[in-house]
Amino acid sequence: MRRPVKTIAAGLVIAAAALYAGAVSAEGDGWITLLDANNKGEWTEVGKANWAMKDGAYSADQRDGKDPSYLVSKDSYKDFQIRAEFWVDEEANSGIFLRCEQRDKIGAKICYEVNIYDKRPDPSYGTGAIVNTAKVDPMPKAAGKWNVYEITAQGPHLVVVLNGQKTVDVQDSTHLNAGPFALQYGSGVVKFRKVQIKPL
Image (cartoon, rainbow, N blue to C red; front, side, top):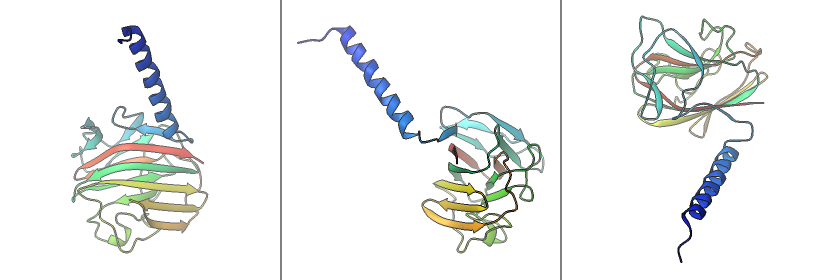
């Protein structure tokens, strides 16, 4: 027995709504998606690179001038968790900068820099480390694959987990105030596929 087309269509709409509700729930619990395959979100660029949405990721492989490019978040955050999916090549220099003291000038002296830099001359502050704050040993490698950073900043307590492995667990009070965070393009090929934040 055939069901009327209207009944089938109504069923599909209900199923789609249920699926959407499930997706919102799965990404609920306070998580806010700032960048994904469908939306690059709202960022202020400091410095200039050829950022563009390609194959479901926001990517850059060239910058204008000698200075790095940073995508700076619209809002400021003090205590939070970040989940970021990223891909880099072997030549990449990138990172995620936290609690930045300024919006128009980003750097490791005025932010915490969770590094993505497999070829850093001093590997103790390379991929998985917080530059000038917490070393990593041995340094993990991120090049050539999709990775997930899970970063928690709660008061002076900073924790960095890369692909399920904790690389940093440190107490530091250098930057305790709320501030924007930033995604860096320094060199090589850098891609961010999904970036989420959860205020704590």
